[in-house]
Image (cartoon, rainbow, N blue to C red):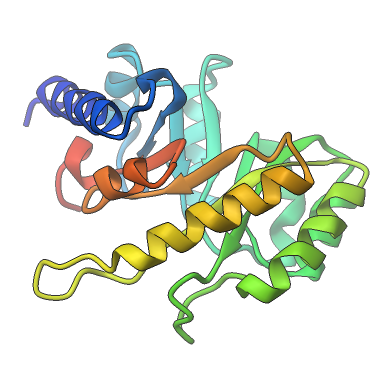
Length: 221
């Protein structure tokens, strides 16, 4: 497997999707999702120019972050958060994508570390998924804005999987609308983390500024 070819292919698709959407490719950040991947693969991807990596599992990621020990990499925590693990998340990650309730806001703020955060929205309204409801978004956003150490940068979502190859575009449209509403209320929150290996072009079409790609870079787990 040649990840250099994979990264080049992804970058070409990002560029094409951005052009189709009438957007600048510079607006879109590629986050390499490196869960269950070894340090050697992460180092290779970094050597090829990637500087943003997403991790889901805290203990595994601590070992990798400590081993690589690069100030050039921004680490993004994209997994579910347990409040008791907030101190370690705050210590090792500069971004957290999965803020979804007041308890987590309070726990991360109590670490007294500056962290860039995104609020996760359960746009598909699936019971099995984490995330705040659309109605609960603004009260939670206000809480983050008023916190001392958390820097609200925007929103994140995991839309429902495609059925029979068809993507539910309405969920992406909804996230774009919610993102605009939040930006109108609080202009620094201009990031939208939307789209993975399967759907990042749809995410870009609807305003995504961060796409989280693992399998298409590193191959299947």
